[in-house]
Amino acid sequence: MADPMRAEVVTLKDGRKVVVRPARLSDAESLLRNVNLIGREGVFILIDEVGPDLDEERQWLGTFDGVRSVLFVADADGESIGSTDCHGGRFAKTRHVGAIGIAIRDGWREVGLGRILMGRTLEWMRVRGFRKAELSVFGSNGRARRLYESLGFESEGISRRHLLIRGAYEDEILMGLWLQD
Image (cartoon, rainbow, N blue to C red; front, side, top):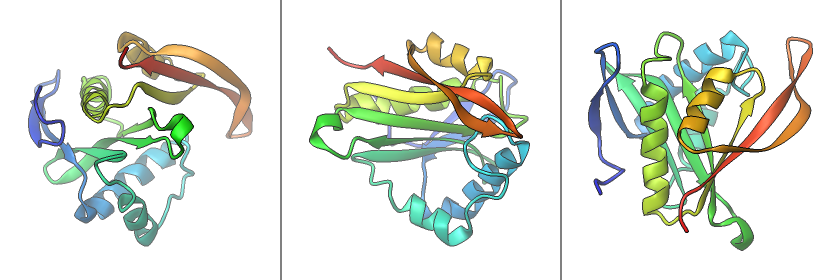
């Protein structure tokens, strides 16, 4: 198995090339721009339309140690256009579980980038000995749900009216994937 912490140039379905690699502290500004662009869309991401400031982003980046947590970046011409992160359970009873988040900029969706980023994150989790991956998805985000299901994730529960988006309540769907027997 290849090292999941490697940097790799990948070709997307539309022929564009991106570099997928572990994030660095120097990525803070680019990651912040990306998440703020996605946040302004107002849907499918928990961050508000105005996200964290640069210091907060740097602090957040500092939480990823590559052992119990990781952040992978998709980089196009030096600019972050997508990312996945995973944080392992903090306590002994949940240490086998990793929670995944994903953010992909508009214009880079539906070209295979989500599958590539999720694949890299799941590969890292297997190498690190995690037994279960979990994530949540907005109930109306059918595209993301189909991706997760195609990777083997199953719906494990619904948190009814958990999200308030533009004045309307929306369900949050909890999904899980068993990684190892």
